[in-house]
Image (cartoon, rainbow, N blue to C red; front, side, top):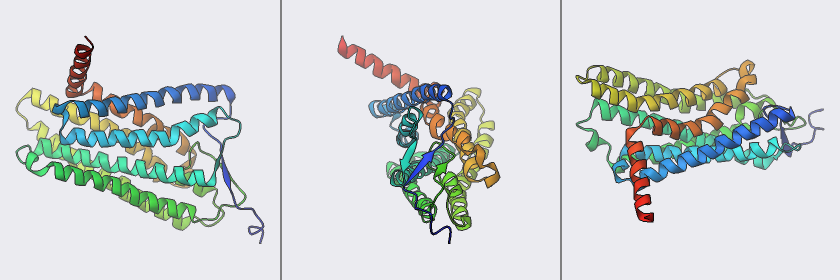
Length: 311
């Protein structure tokens, strides 16, 4: 009876990462710098792939899709967070929270699928190089990319539906800096067991299943690389796959901790979210660029062409 007298929540108050003004200013500067690097890095990497014909390969096609997902993912989160860091009114409307929730899940789940597809691409390129051109045709690459984006649509719709179907009455303070299922379910005014199970099962589908595929791919890759006769071949293979593995560990590790752990560990949620929501989209282009000779060569070629045109 008391619950029915409570008013329905029309907006949420995001507690953020800190309530100390000086800490918020420091976080604002850091988040802004990271976001600007994210935009610059992902746009630069995408431009290089589009401008350099030697990068028109399946690996860089998927990397472009990942850069697009990273850019959209970060833009869904960081600008709103920056505004709240400078504002005393850290509120977001229920509709705005629902939209952010849907987009975060959509772009985040798409990233999960793309990373898995990229590991499969590397597996074929290293373990089955003779048949690689026959298997990874452009038609297959486009279909795989569409499947990744489609998986983001399906999982985001399921998680959003099970999260927002619950009543939200009275309590509207979210111990987070963004709208995510684990944080929203804590303030729901009803039993959240079914919704938690749905989010967990979707986590198994979009997190644990791709991680399993990635682990199997890299076991095969390592076994194949060890059998290589030349040291240069082993070094090139490890260098190419090492970049992808670093991204996988950072992204999947933090996402699994946040979505696949019990409520008792949810206090770490907002801290862990910083890694896959803010830092990882910036690291992706840096890791793939700094550790990749093809990208470095493409950058020099494009820069030289631009310099020659201006002269």
